[in-house]
Amino acid sequence: MKNTIKVERARKGFTQADLAEKVGVTRLTIHSIETGKFNPSLMLALKIADCFGTKVEELFELENDD
Image 1: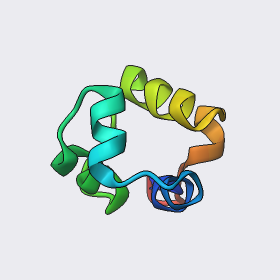
Image 2 (image 1 turned 180 degrees about the vertical axis):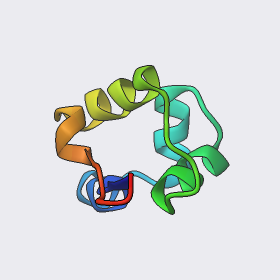
Image 3 (image 1 turned 45 degrees about the vertical axis):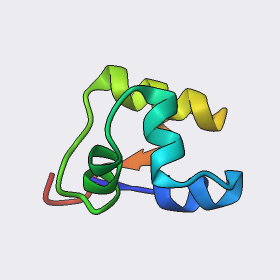
C-alpha cells in the first residue's frame, strides 16, 4: 500500500513527531507507515486522515501487488 502522508505532513508543516503526538503513536510508527514498512489499522488511518482534514482513501492507495 502506498501513501501520501509525508507530502501531507509537509503541507501542514508537521514533523513526524507532531503527527505521532496528535494520533497517539510513536514517531517511529509514523516513519514506518511513510516508508511502507507498516500498514496502519483502520482506526489509526482514520485518525491520521482526520488530522489532515481529508479522507482515508486520499492518503492511502492499494498497489497492484497488495
